[in-house]
Length: 206
Image (cartoon, rainbow, N blue to C red; front, side):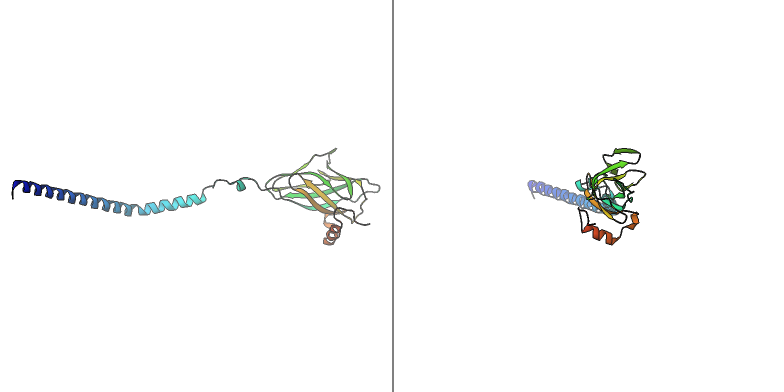
């Protein structure tokens, strides 16, 4: 074998040795990576679980629907009126107003087929009130010793046992009607309401 062939053979042998060494390093590196992943797998899984649980429990960005408070939701109970005194020209009305919504509302007025005018008044002053606030998730009771309603310009003087339709006007909730007996609050019956509803927005026959 001449010198040129020997040199070419030596170069090939050297290149083969380099390739083999590189392959060993790559195989060794892959093995190290596999061992590292095997060692770190439990940690990575635990971290993934923690991140998942945190993502579920973390406060979510408020949407337009959840950011806004729920609207006022008005209900009424214990409505009633004082029996009128002889020769009376006005009549006081009382009711408990409940707001089950997340936004306050205001009672701004009232009407009735029985009266020409209904004023919101404070027991401590003869002046009319512009409104009565009903707080969110709260209630207000209109009673003789506090804010209440006064019916005047009566179209008919009611008597004990009559059922009076009251239309309460709210700034946000609109008009909500209630039937109020003339007498104790607990004197209203289902039959009274059924009969009163036959004559909605007008005086019942005498």
